[in-house]
Length: 245
Length: 325
Ligand SMILES: Cc1cc2nc3c(=O)[nH]c(=O)nc-3n(C[C@H](O)[C@H](O)[C@H](O)COP(=O)(O)OP(=O)(O)OC[C@H]3O[C@@H](n4cnc5c(N)ncnc54)[C@H](O)[C@@H]3O)c2cc1C
Ligand SMILES: Nc1ncnc2c1ncn2[C@@H]1O[C@H](COP(=O)(O)O)[C@@H](O)[C@H]1O
Image 1 (tube, rainbow over the protein chains, first blue to last red):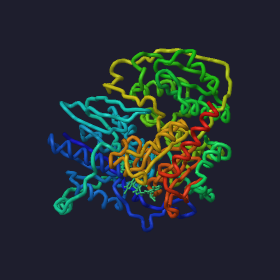
Image 2 (image 1 turned 45 degrees about the vertical axis):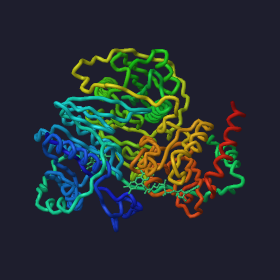
Image 3 (image 1 turned 30 degrees about the horizontal axis):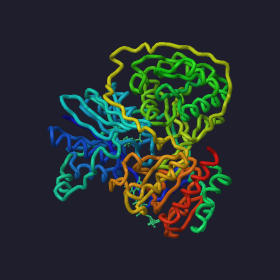
Image 4 (image 1 turned 90 degrees about the horizontal axis):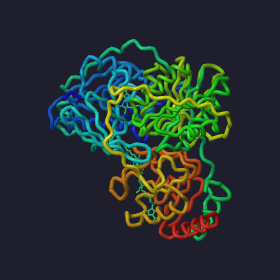
């Protein structure tokens, strides 16, 4: 089985978000970048599947050279090889088009993404990519089994869960319970140095959106404190003052 | 030209998030002097579908087909894209629910439309086509300009009002015009949470953290939730330890929610937790540590032991419920 895992390089979850250049650019000074947490789960599941059934796991990132440490980490975790499409990721549509233009001649049986990237949060690459490749997609999966070319999955839906199946090839996006993230071991780290990381020139694609500026949420006013002895007053305040219950 | 909106249903009924999307699309149509076309897909009665005109739909296209009674992304996306072309739609609005998230990118790719999800503003068309969205898991907002002729907007639930905006009913009932090849995923089983308020749709959410010490103490969360018609949620370690199901885990790597009231009990307020809940309109924090970072993000706070203060709060909430019963 030939699996592709899309990984995005995102600021660590503890990052305090700030902007520069008159609030038009994310301030990366001092920020630690990591593999998007959901993508790590997708990678872990891909490795579990190929360890059981044979096959390869390729990781792909659309990004500049600053993504390389995250890509190397994915190789250290166990990916067979890696592709970096050399372009600044503008938006989900652009990223999906870049990946589609690479993947269309590669005949992957399965493509996995994360549910969303924790920086851009669009949650769209999975559906866009599938449509561009003309194959089905299933988003927000919590389990994935593959047998005889059929994928059986559990996905979150509004107000519940759905078990469903689809023939490969398929694109699916990983949710929390899909797998346990893996930590690279020493051997993995050593072997990652010699695994292929191929840099592919970006396809000429017009962008169809532009981020003009950012803003931080207004700071909360002060918190109204209620003495624990009078805890019941809280309900009255929520009802009469905040009017939320 | 028109503004198209996907009117999602569950078992033949429209959810609040759907009505918000229809009202949003109607408002955009009004501001751009076009019409709002709502598309319902599945097994919705015509009389039910007609209700969408109350929320501003100028035209309702009711696509009826038993095979589409439950949501399936591929055929739904195909139908929406087809109708968008027929109606010459310049903007397609969906609610950013699980269904909306799976359908919006497909429709966008079919129509070569620029797409923005997590939208929290009406479009500003004074110079280009700008919308505001949340980024960095709620830690910031971004203003995005879409430059394609057709645009897809996935709007954040519980952000826009469901203004009533009575229009005369204009309903067209059609069949889907799909064939078997359009169904390329097969649903095996759907399990819905019953008798409980769904977390992603809840207006009030009661959430517990590690401070509650163990799953046996969750009655403090559940009893308050019951009294306030609220959904329940938890922090990541709570679901990692299997005290609660992962479907309740909110935060940067869990569900992002935006209720009117988020009530945090024994949760410290780590940055990853705040990311998923900080857009809530009102936040209440109960924590025995006055230095807990969550108080900085709170509107109301009690520094105290949850095991002592929660019974009083639950009692008061039950009284309020009885008064309004
Ligand atoms: C990559 C990554 C992603 C993460 N994603 C998420 C996420 O999505 N969501 C999430 O929640 N976390 C996430 N975390 C974890 C996060 O960093 C915190 O560890 C977590 O939110 C803490 O949970 P907590 O507040 O329940 O527990 P704690 O931090 O242990 O806090 C317990 C709180 O309870 C209070 N307390 C104790 N006893 C009582 C009492 N009797 N009465 C009242 N208060 C009491 C304490 O004062 C304390 O403030 C993530 C971490 C990482 C590294
Ligand atoms: N620059 C990128 N390179 C490779 N994959 C990406 C990139 N950005 C996003 N993805 C993938 O798409 C998923 C959803 O991202 P998004 O649509 O941006 O929320 C992520 O979890 C990744 O799997």
